[in-house]
Image (spheres, one colour):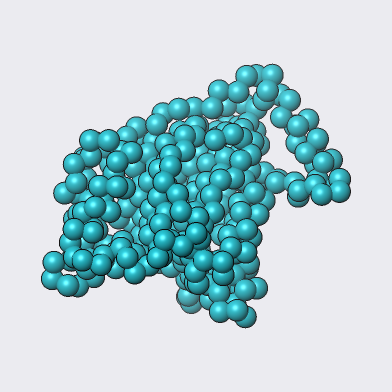
Length: 308
């Protein structure tokens, strides 16, 4: 992906994306082979190539009903593309769905932000099925339970349900070969041999039975295994899976490019005021993001936020 690019939508897709620090594979098959579905997926890269954001959302409705929502989410991805802290992005998504609630629109979502200089991943879950984590050193899959926020009242609820801003962020360090799988509920609502829904535990068991020979074939192998459990699995809803793996690639901007970055930001600001110009995607004000773009040692400040 190119810097400042936002890729994704709610159309059928089966492709890979390579970014600094991450290889990603995206699969989406809308219900009944429609041209658009209710599952939305996006990947973005910041101006310096250090920040990659990934989003999977399951929006109420199908097809063209979700098309405008997908456009709005793309706009939000672009607005926050240069922000390392994803909390404001999650809050903005919730407010967007609150405005759509009069149409009965809401969504579950999982957002991930990867900071390549420190291999730090931030995960936020808004009422979505838990992400699955594969650790290369153990060769095993496990899943993240949604955290309790530690405050009274609802938290981490689906977007558009309540006008709240209490969404937890979980931090972890990815090592080479580690993988994360985000998906929509069609995978855990498959039925096992006993006729019951698999749930997260059942999905983990299937993942741990798969032989990972090539990461690029993992989604296909997983969907084949789910389809083999019972007739009709994966045919009653949209199916979306996003897999990404730490690849050790680092952005290598020259010193000159780093020093010119403030001037490029000024140019983008000027362009945003021109007719038809897009709003300026401001970076968040912290040393790891702004300072780290010019002086690499400052990037390490973000790695200290890991709580795993």
